[in-house]
Length: 202
Image (cartoon, rainbow, N blue to C red; front, side, top):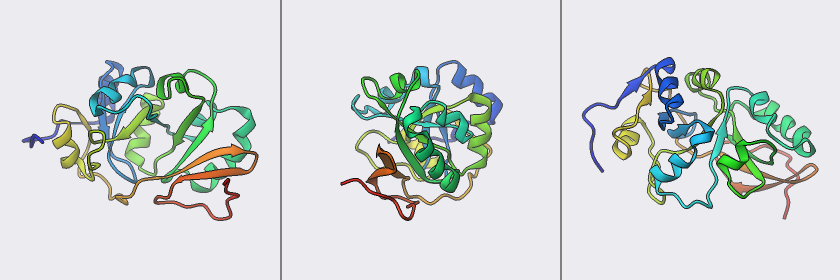
């Protein structure tokens, strides 16, 4: 990896201008640093990461409403219940979706992964930018970056959200829950947050 002299660091207003110009940026979260881009330019993350096209991206938003307005009404109440308990936080909900975001983040699929990160500076960015397509800051199949410097090693020309240093994070990926039916969830990945009392699908 190339070792950068200084990561490119920008405040949220400046970073939004880069996003609006279809650029990928690097953001902190409460779990691991991530790549982010406006959903209509999501293909750029797959290109940056050399990521297989059948691996969907995650939609992050500043509020639960900004995310759950994109999901099918059939799962809304179940998703809202978990969101009220665990968002902001390290819980990704994979839900049947409606609207355009699923076409951008999961082409050919019907589900959309949604998360509201517990990182106030990233939520400030999301408030200004709107929801963003996201993925971990690393090449596909390589170790995930755990801090701003490691993210800059992978992507030295990509602007990062400032100011830095970023808030402390868990260093552990989010838990992924897939909605499989009324009040039923499949745990696709055990991560930093694990809701209690889930009715888990086989």
